[in-house]
Length: 200
Image (tube, rainbow, N blue to C red):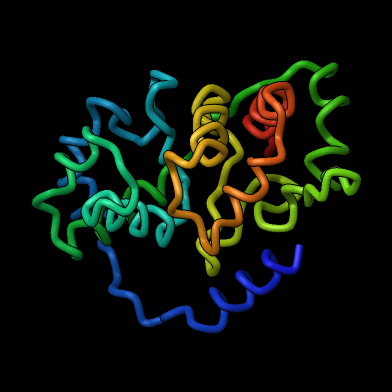
């Protein structure tokens, strides 16, 4: 928990608010190549690919930069971002952030089981509630680059939690997601993935 607080203070304290401005129309014109996986409006039809519609602009830029640098590893995305300039990234992020995420649904049974865990975590296992970074509705915190996770495909959320848990994804601030997901069981991940997707 202390690590989480320190990371949040560090991120907020050193955040550069003078980011380049993205142009929504320019981003729309540049987004055609993204549509094959993410759809024209960023709401991917396949759960192999994340929905990026409505995601925070700063988070999209961060992910694109890290795919390009190799800090976040993905063979497909590495090829897609190789020739993107910083302005291209800002424009694409501005466009997709301006779109609306399509909603997901969850059964009442899953919602009932998962809500307490999502909101408050499990103190016996030293697992903080997801709300600490992602908020009660899964909207995240843009200034700290904590992503919006509501409306995302459950299968994609599940895959990312598993990647953080096994260390194949490690581009989270101060290793927070690695620490948290390392304490999650398969059933925890399954439950949270379904619940988070339907938050709105």
